[in-house]
Each structure stands twice: as structure tokens, then as C-alpha cells.
Image 1 (cartoon, rainbow, N blue to C red):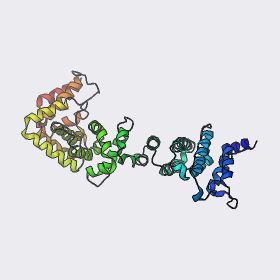
Image 2 (image 1 turned 180 degrees about the vertical axis):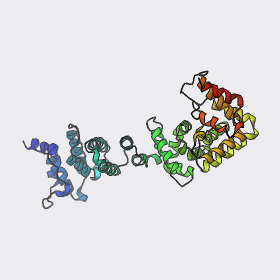
Image 3 (image 1 turned 180 degrees about the horizontal axis):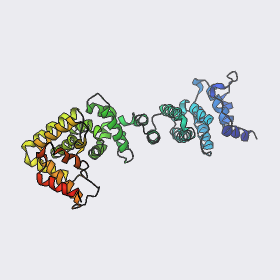
Length: 386
């Protein structure tokens, strides 16, 4: 009866804090052994520190480990921990034997994660409180990398806040072990998302930002993803990323022209990347071979760069269009032909219209007749009548 009563109290009644015990009554080691035989977890842990530090033998540590494991096996039978059990587990983890007990650490990570996720779902209106509890829980033991990754993914999924989510892996990603995790397809997009945010919100040089964020072993694993990822970024996020790619020598010379060209034609703001790409494109004026390679690369894109054509910043539009007209004049005829082919249905484009701002380009020819070949302007007029 006594054993069953204690198990009932463990699973359903509020648990007393270690600190709430009457310290006027000190238990002996023999008392603890009897409590262990009875699986009386609550009373055992409330009195295990009654043994003076100089008398805490290896056998004492074994008893602590044994009782913690047994306690975990009992509570695992329930769907999730109660708040009292979660607090009790946190207090247990302060005991020196359990801080280094691999089995208990795994148990704590599993039970704690399930409890915190359940609390978030129950009290979503108070999710910030649960998030703070997650951070506290994680900070007590940051050696469980898998737990950190799970918490990161959960928080990012529920909040969309990459910075809140990154808290749980910020230290992991600065270690050589990060190379293992950065191989994973479910982790790479999150790492790249955080890198993009950091590059766009840091005042430090891009390479220093990278080094502060990721260990070189992680960076090695995601390098192969960054060029494709860059292409999919919103235009206002591309500048620092382009600078990083260039500094890391991840762009072959023939691809630098494409990166620079698409960046400028998409209508970027002023930045270091803007100046670099401007200089890259300027060099195209004296190399017909480089311009031909560029046009061949542009033909492979599902959508041609044309954001600046539709820009509301008329002065920026004028400057960039005039600049491109001087150094890569072939582009405007190429763009116009592609637009006409789409409108007439002469070519099937798998991802739809590749020239989203075609109308804006032809509007510009009213003030700049030399921008597009007159024959193409006529063909465009006929195509839009179809």
C-alpha cells in the first residue's frame, strides 16, 4: 500500500521542491537505500543531499542515477509531464551525478521537449512565456545538439522568427560538429536563412559576419547550396550575399557577369554590391565574347531580369537603363524578342511569362527610340492586338 501511495503521489499530486524539506530531520545513507528499494522517488530526492559532500561515495552516486532512471521510466508512461514533474526533473538535474549521466540527459531532453511543446500548444496566447522556459531549459545543458536542433525547428515553425530559433543552435554552429549537421537537407535552408539575415543586418564585413556565425566546417557543407539560394532571394537581400560569394571566390568569372547583370537589372539600392556589380558590367563594353556568353546564360533563366523597368524610382530607372544601353545594348532587343515570342505563343515557356515588365520597356522607347529595334516595336504592337 505504501509503495502504491507514493507512485500515486508522484504521478498525480504536486511534487514538493527539494528546498521545501524539513532539514531538521536528516536522513542517513541507510535511509536512502531503503527509499531506493521502495522506489520512493520523491522522498529520496528530497533527502539525497542530506549526505555530507565528503560522504557522497560512488555508491551514493549510483543510487542517484538508479532512482533518476526509475523515475523517468515511471513518468514516461504518461502522455506528458505535469508542470510539477517538469520542475522536479529540473531540480534533479542540478545533482552532480545526473549532470554527467548520459542516459538521464537523453531522458530529460525527450521528456522536457514533449512537455514544452505541449505547453506551447495549450497556451499559445502565452507562447512567449513558454519560449522563455525553452531557453532556460536549453541553457541548463547545451550539450544535446539534437535537442537544440529540434527546438530551433519548432520555434521557427511556430514563430517564423529566425533569431529566436537560432538561439538554440548558435553555439553548436560555431563548433567543428556543425559540419555534420550542416550536411542535412532539413538544416541547410535554415542556416542559409540565418546567414542571409545576418549579412543584411550586420555592420561588420561580410566575411567576418560569416566567421562569427558559422564554423568553417559548416560553411564547407553549405557552399554548394549558396549560389542557387542566392538566385531565389528577394532583390533587396542579394547585395551582401553577392559580396560574400565574390570574396569567397564562389563565382567563376563567366558567372560573375550573370550575377552582376541580374542584380543591376532587378533594381537594387545603393550598396557595396551595387558598386561592385556596376564595375563588373562596365567591363563588358569592351568584350563582345563576354556579352555573348552572358546572353546565352540569360536564355536559360525562367524569368529575365527586368525589375528596374517597372521601378517607381524614375531617376534610378533612367540611370540604369542608359548604363545598360551603353555597355550591353544587345539585351534590350533580346528581351523584346523574348517578350514577343511569349505573346504570340511562338515559344512555350515552362514557367510562364519570362518578361514580366515587357510593357514598361516599350513605354520607355517613347522617350528613347533607340532602345529597341523599330521592327521589334512594330511586332510588339501587332502581338498585343492578338
